[in-house]
Length: 453
Ligand code: KIV
Ligand code: ZN
Image 1 (cartoon, rainbow, N blue to C red):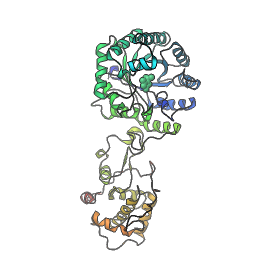
Image 2 (cartoon, rainbow, N blue to C red):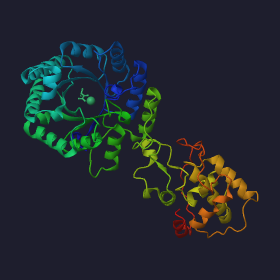
Image 3 (tube, rainbow, N blue to C red):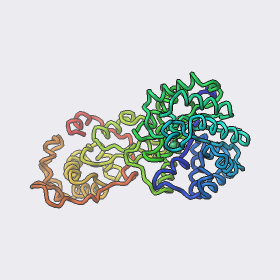
Image 4 (tube, protein in one colour):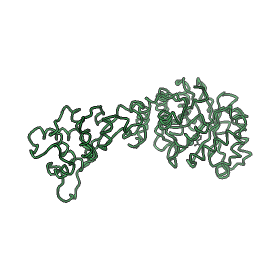
């Protein structure tokens, strides 16, 4: 594949991500995460904003010294002092980049910066020229680009390219754009800015409308060749485009995104966990790719499909992102196949009659608890094996009959709903559920379907 098709993964977890409430890190923690980002294979690590604090200066300095493969970027406003501090912090870097930014929207120019467009143009070009005089790799970001006048945006991009920028970044700073519009903006820039073909166009999207990943991918399809993103999607307000979602979309859908990316996707989960560990901020269970539930299956029909062939309900393998395995969560939507498999993993191969009994008890328990854990399942097996099993149970019972059997367990409620509900002590931890194995019970498929599996 040609170099042109390479999409650069620019990780800004340690800069924009750190701006997420509760996610600030010491320089030692940043260095620890940077080592993992290096293992993950990102192309660029934005290490920090050196002028902002001594800690950030040290963090950038440490990464510049110890992390040798990826480009190490330091952020700077379009001010001489900022640029000089950034360059000082990058002094020992093998592959330094100065990333300088200035807002270009009238809202920011009038209300925040209180400067004219002309002054903005001059400040941006001067800053890039200064950065270029010391560092060969200079990125310019037009903050709030998506709310900027496209004519002015093109003008300023031309000025910074003339001044030596090698990457021009188009941030959707406030997460306002939508995919089709952002793609159009990238195309407009490609069509109208002289010299754009010699530089890398980058997308930097925030997630205020939940569109950061979609917008970044739209930009890639329109010609952007760098995406700026963060691990777990952390970042200012609703966060930045999530690195793992971008990477895996391109991995899973090469038909739509035929680009080369250097990231080793098997390191995604470990990286995500390390970030949670360092910041103490967990990801939501249903977070794509690395959330606790991303490869967990509860519905019986899904579990049944998974046992037969994981392609039925998984579009990527857990191993491809470094998750140890798929999990079956046993709850009221689960079926006998998954329950039988769990029993086997616990060391008990139940015959059909025993399984019917355990399954009925299990359903009753599951109705009162979010999930049913191994100790409860072992208890049910024990009952089945210790003569508690009533003799009137037949193996071809229907689910309806199973429902009427709830009074077989002391933990069910056959009368009115009690004032005090059972505790939710049965919550599960990721990885506690047994790993999924191929162990289809032949000949039972149709029956399982009737049982709601
Ligand atoms: O969101 C933004 O505009 C930024 C710039 C500094 C690139 O983070
Ligand atoms: Zn940002």
